[in-house]
Image (cartoon, rainbow, N blue to C red):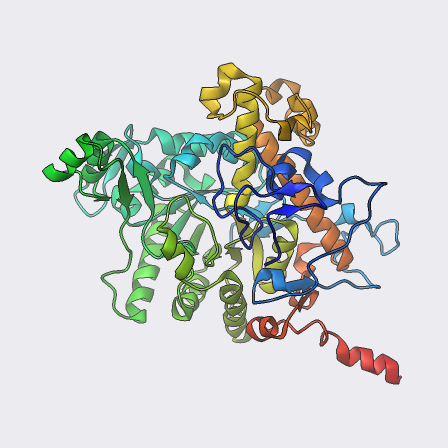
Amino acid sequence: MRFSKSNDVLGTTNRGNPAESSLCTLCRADCNGRCETWLSSLVGRKLLYPRSFGIVTAGANNTTHVGVSYNSLRIQGYAYGVSGLKDNLTNNPDDCIFPNVSLETEFGQEMKTKIRMPLMTGALGSTFVAEKYWDSFAIGGALAGIPVVIGENVVGVDRQSKIKPGETRKGKIEVSPELDRRIDTYLRYFDGYGAIIVQLNVEDTRNGVAEYVVEKYGEKCIIELKWGQGAKDIGGEIQVTSLEYALFLKDRGYVVDPDPTLPEVQEAFENGSIKSFARHSRLGGTNLDTVDQVQEDFMSSVDYLRGLGFKRISLKTGSYGMEELAMAIKFASDAKLDLLTIDGSGGGTGMSPWNMMQSWGVPSINLHAKAHEYAGMLAAKGQRVVDMSFAGGFALEDSIFKGLALGAPYTKLICMGRGIMIPGFVGANIQGALKPEERASVNGHWSELPKSVLQVGSTAKEIFAGYFDLQKKVGKDEMKNIPYGAIAFCTLADKLGCGMQQLMAGARKFSLDKIARGDLMSGNRETAKETGIPHVADVNDESARKILNG
């Protein structure tokens, strides 16, 4: 593994055990820091470089690669040439500087969705973390110009929503305050870049979420069908500690474990031996037995959504086997969907069975390598392949580059879950410490700034490197309405964007559409075999020999 608990070069440390992404396996909203993502949310692009300049030298410790993972891929650099420059730039050294690298891109079919940088959030659904920190995530995402995804079950778990049973399989949502809040918060700062995506699972479909969204918001939202995710192979879960709430969820049609309607369970709860209930969603596709049936059902669902009026439709799939991966790519391409998100094992969760998360599914790098292979098979037959997003264990700028390159030219953006939520946590904690009267409303956990923050600064203007860039964008008057979590979000996004620009400039690629698989090398033979990315000693070896023999 590339990451240890502490990084002396950057002055960062993980509270818990670091995963392949560099994040702790268990990321806490009340954490005092200071992993690389946490600290980047404050100091931004400063964390691209070793600390203590002028009295140190630094050396890499990631040149020996063991095992197959994204960390066993290395990024190729070149000593000459350049591609992808904007029309007003030339190939002279004064123009070929990394700030001139363009990170803007787009995805979709007939109705293109523009984004400022190749990122999107993971699905932030019915988990209470998503609800508590939504303003930070949504406003930060809108200001950064990236898509934000509203995950499953938001309507169903909202005790203020009103759902009238429908005459058919679908209910009719009369009121949905939480879903409205989430969409409206993003749209308030939406400026043409990014998108708000609303996800559907079995219960959402039954409750009529799609009908409600299209009737109220029309073309402003992308609707997303969900097959699964990389952290689990069953439906979504949350945990509640109220018997009354558990009974409400049971009445709403969810699977609640243990069953709160049983007298013995209620007695155990009243006596303290049962302290919480897990709410589960249902498996999809249980009435389908063959690939043909899955395809027919999928196309029917897409046709229905288009008939409702949705102009943009996406699909999210998990780390199932190769058959399901092929179905997702083929069906999404045939249906002319706008985006397919492929989430590999190693991705995060709000709540999933832990040992399931550890043991099930296809690791991200294997799944994504196969996705490129399968997409290439369709393209070779002349079919337009659906635009793809890769998810599952991404947090740093180098992993973003690697994911885009591994799936090039089909992968348009990287879906980042936990990594892009951390700034929401730390920003809310800072806001609550500096403004005690707002602590409860922003869900801050600190009564005072910890030493890890005070080493950076003691006011928002001192702490957040991105403060004044954001103030320039929204204006001084509006800045007072921007939660600190959104400021931290944009600060982290700026660091990731700058890091991407530097990596792309080193690869001589000044626009995202020029990134290619040839910009990667495998650090070991096993990774080369599994991904199709040549080993470092084999890349350009033939052309090297021609030079020597010329």
